[in-house]
Image 1 (tube, rainbow, N blue to C red):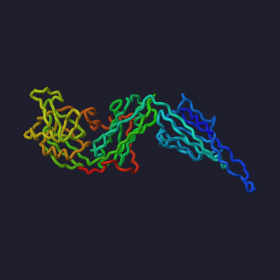
Image 2: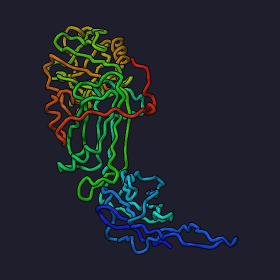
Image 3: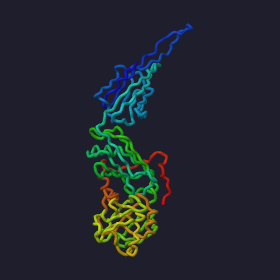
Image 4: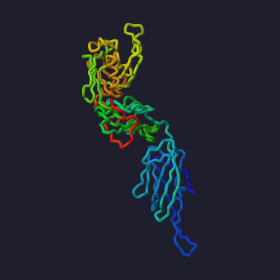
Length: 420
């Protein structure tokens, strides 16, 4: 009976296989002939499992055959029944895993081999991987649970479960993040901080691009004691190129679709002391009705500037509360002067139209305001205000990447929603 004590080693595992040669036998008919005897592989004494020396999940597991014999099948299976991908050498003398192994996991290895003289055998063994002190997982964005269609300015985001500070470890994280798209684009990762990364193309996403993002670091060693956890992935589609320019000097908003002007709308932006931020912003969300209060931006209740009211058709562009929204109380000033507390206000009819013709990920650029520049991070997506040269400098790998074209796949739910 085969010894099942397992396998040890950090740089790879070697299972030596021995298959006994066939023996002669006699038939009851009196005619002597050679009967092929099939015996199971006897791996006793050739495999070993050490309780203190388990397999590094970032290293491949290797199965080799003794001289004269060859492997016919090797299967490595985890406790969840999933088979780990592997590759058999051309001479069938060795096999090694190509798929990722999970940390702190026991695997079963089933091996079939031939001795080169007609003998065949099978054996089952196993090994366990090192326990990870910590597992690194990634929350990917944007959340494509809705329509799955986003504007051309939408960055991809990654929020890590653990802070990663070491430059080499950051490179491992970037290598584990794969972005595929059709068509392919040139893009790069930017480390916002120790736990957050953004990915954007050099130019805006092309209309109709399908994008897939995956974090595939399962079992990989990121740094001492930190290994990749479960895989995460998302898919989305890019809609038409819709970009709006808010000119605080002329008090107009111009919306373009695919480079063509669709409508110019009279607006009002932030008055002195509440000037609207300049720069490129990305639509973060839309609300049919939202409650706005001056206290949320530091205006004391009861003061001359205080307000507390319901606002309709609100399209958010910063987390701090800057919107493009309906402002029926300032119609007389729209197109004439700036009287808001930082938002871009327009008539209810125009705000409703803007709301219907805009989606998350679309671009809203403010020019000629006396306000400060849009923050690159932390108050929404100001990613496009960073030059491409500076953006690439904040990649751990220090260079842009070309997204590969993914294999044909079923579209994500909602990915073929009609474009506005």
